[in-house]
Length: 198
Image (cartoon, rainbow, N blue to C red; front, side):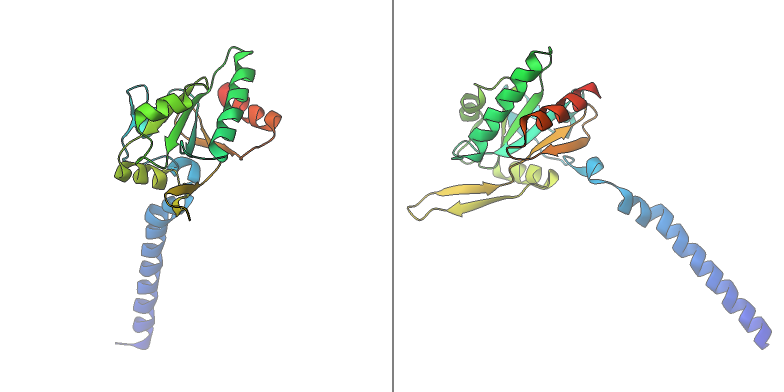
């Protein structure tokens, strides 16, 4: 084989390899890298029980803008404070003839049954409690990328350490933006109004 022919074949193989790498990039790797958090958050095969008797799945987030908050009924501060904030948001929205659909998903299903959660959230308009088996709650925690950890107490028993933000989803079930714990009232309501306006 002449050296010129050898160079030609090496060049041809090099072009073929580059073409295959480019094909792999554009058909496999690039779409995965460009899949945004908004497209993935809340997606999963979890199936939970709502306090109104319905089933909470990723499809539940479609149809109407909604908010999702993970917490637990024995929470000493973050959860009651957040529910108080939600109540204030709902009051402001009601004056405009609007209401936000809110799901309070427990991170402590061993203690938070649907019946118990129903009582816990009943004082806040538009809030539905969500519970289920430990395995299904863990699936939801992963799907929403929430932090939740059981923390033993020195006197016995336990509490839960968990993420403290409210996640807003549009009517397609796509993540829009978070509301931080104790975010300024006008800022939070502004985000919700924008969500509802579409």
